[in-house]
Image 1 (tube, chains in turn cyan, orange, brown, purple):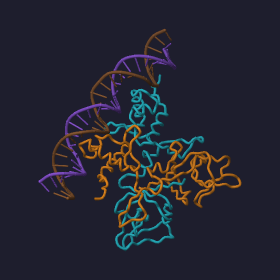
Image 2 (cartoon, helix red, strand yellow):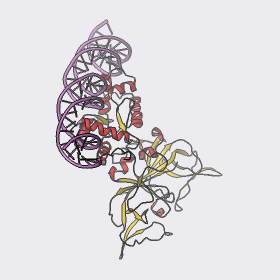
Image 3 (cartoon, each protein chain N blue to C red):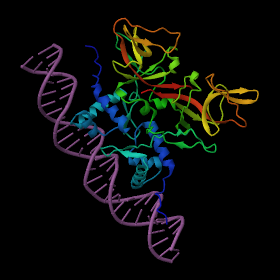
Image 4 (cartoon, each protein chain N blue to C red):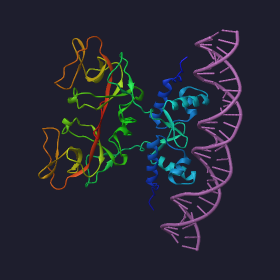
Length: 198
Length: 198
DNA sequence: TTGACAGCAGAACGTTCGTTCGGTAGCTTA
DNA sequence: TAAGCTACCGAACGAACGTTCTGCTGTCAA
């Protein structure tokens, strides 16, 4: 007889856990899990958790609290090749996609969102109403898209250099280059973009 | 003497908690928190948690486990008007922004991500390499940006109608309109877009 | 029809949890 | 200089936690 793979657990268990997590952003204790799953023995919960852990859906903190594992948040990143009309869902390309937040945000405490006003960066694919993910830092490199503070307002522009010093270049020929008098105040550097279309 | 507001706690405490949460997706126990914050009395941790709770950063599950509160994930959506160089952070416009995931994804089980290949939708601000948030559904309205399956590949295009039936229109004059022979297979409708630029 | 095994229940147990309470050191105000 | 407040420590305690072990039931292969 072939070496038998451990039977996968009822996927409903995982879904219920994920729903609970989506609502509370926290993993419940075994006894709550028991209620959630309609199980009356903590020992069995313990066993189920062990298997989810083996499957990569759960993990442990260094303090032995258990937490969502790598696959817990896995969102289907659909392949660009499809077989027989049935799209073949697969884990994100190379990097481990966890949540969109993690994909975009590296340092939560230094990251802000800025809503874009106007069409001045439209050639860079930045539209009115988009949210720019900004990593706050006081300086940037030429070529970066930066969020600067000009006349007490946020502006999203390319950072460039002219003989006179740093300038802010729009990505739209209808808009002028901004040549700040005095110091150019940089709020942060664009790290990503989020747009909602529904 | 004026009624004194409760002193706000060291913001570093909150940041450390948020960083811990970002890493582990779980709220640690009081004793771990004590280590994290460099505090040696659980009783003091308890008091700090109480204040974060009052401030709306922490909350409780119905099972009295404590969890991130409404403001825990609040990402500074910076105002477009700034006072005296000090950007005034504020809560997201009208909706309660929680996480970017929540902002973009309404039905997790029906939502996929599709990576864009090529420049065919560049006039719609969709670039090569962007991730499209797709709500899977078999039909769509004219004018929607849809993800369709053509020749076993995903294509992102506008849905439009000609006398012959439905067609897929690119947002780039250099690309042709796609007139599918037979049924047009729609994978889903675009609900959002995510781009990472760092 | 017997044995092996998987799915579950239940009790027992030591550990860890969060709470409570009493205490101290330093700063303010009066 | 005494009173009051804030930031924090430390011990004690009962409740809740996760683990382990024993046992029952149903299924399936031999």
